[in-house]
Image (cartoon, rainbow, N blue to C red; front, side, top):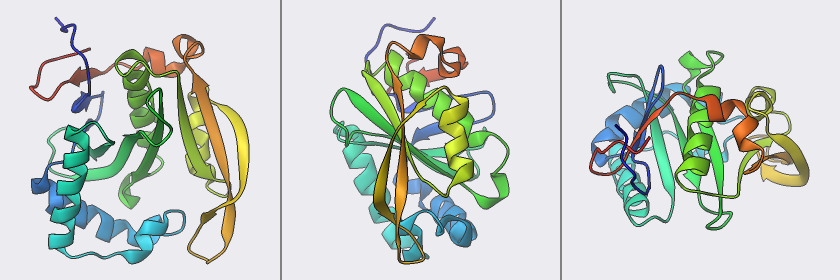
Length: 209
């Protein structure tokens, strides 16, 4: 039986995926996944323009991410296959909106796009945000040209709340408009995310939901 435990959630198991906090030992998997997907990612993710990074930089990055995770400052996850032998992408429940909200971001390896993984991940983390973190709202931001990414919040019942003009600097060197999709706490029970079947675990491996 799930225990009445607080977050944060370190590990989420969905129907097809494991979404969990990174460890420094994941550096090789992360480097491989990003290197293989660089051209795919750099169109909409400015950080991908700096790739490839060497392995030591990956280790240092994961140590920083893990430190912030353990301190409750930011929650960045890897998206793994069930065996955790391959990194299919990255995601996060970011805290930059404040203590009572989360922003979900995601990227998917080039070989696994158009398979519904971003939607599956976002539904799972939306459930975590509302049911465990007890936030008031969740946001997803995407560049206006990123049609595939924008389809994710739309499927999950988020509302297109705003267009932030010229806020995203993309690969072509120009600033592009960014869409802000929002789901509120009183909307969540009626959303597809509330129906997501997940198992969530704390840092000690105890099941929360």
